[in-house]
Image (cartoon, rainbow, N blue to C red; front, side):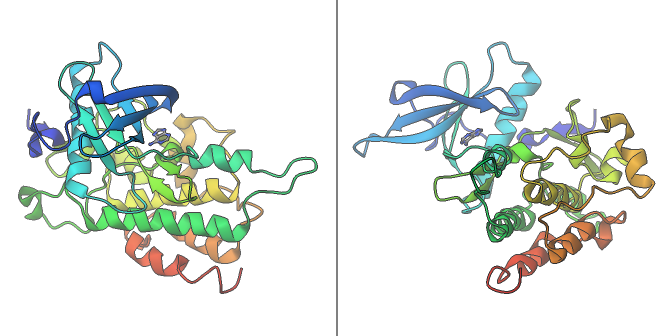
Length: 310
Ligand code: ADE
C-alpha cells in the first residue's frame, strides 16, 4: 500500500516498565470522551509506595476496530518517545495485557480549558474568574508545550529527510479538547489522538471526523499537515481563549470553511483581546504557512508580557 501506521515505527513491548497489573488499578467516575473512547478518573497503587496515585484512564470501547487499536498504541508510542514537559500531559502507564487496553495519563483536575473558561464567565453578581493577564498566561503555557512538541518531532524519518522540507511534520491537530488544566492552573496539551499514516511526502489523517474549524487552508484543501498547520490551529485556540470558550465560526458549516478562509474572512477579534495578541493571532492565520511564526518564536512573544503592558 505504501503507507504505514506510525505505530509500526516504534516497538511497543507488552512487558515493560509502564505496564500496570489490573488488580492495582481502580476506575472511578467518567471524566468525558476522548479521541478514542471514554476517559475515567482512576487510581493506581505502586508496589513500592504507600497510597494511591490519581490519574486519568483512557479506555478503548469494547469491540473497537483494528485501526482504533493501532491509533491507541500510536498515541502511547508517541508519549513514550516524547518524555515529559510541564505543559504536555504525561504518561503514567498502561494496562495492555488483557482487554480492554487502558492508557493511564496525568490527571488534569480542572478538565478542559474551554469549559473552564465558560464556567468562569461573568454572570449576575459575579465577576469574570480569569483576568486578561491569566488568559495570556494560558496562551504562554500552550505555546511552551507546543514548542516542546515542535522541537521533538519524533515522526520525522530518515527516509523523508532526503526530501527538501521547509517545515517539520505536525504531531496532531489542535482543538479545544486538547488543552487540559490541572489543579495548579497549568495548561497541558493532550490527546495525540488522530492517526497519521505516512503517505510518501506528507502525513494525512485517516479519521473522517476532522476538526475542520481548527484546520489550516492547506490541510483542508490539500491534506498537508505541518507544525505550521498546528500554528494556525493555535490561532483558533487563542480566539477561543479570549472569547472565554466561544465557538469558532458558529454560524458556518464545515463545508464552507475553506471557501470562507480563501476569500480572506477571519474570525472577529474577541472583545477582551489585547492588540498585541490580535497581531499574533493574525500572523498565525497567514494564508502562506511560511509566514506563520514557529512555536519557538511565539515563546518570546508571550514571555514577560504580564508584567509589561496589557
Ligand atoms: N479528560 C480527558 N483527559 C483527561 C485528563 N487527563 N484529565 C482530566 N480530564 C480528562
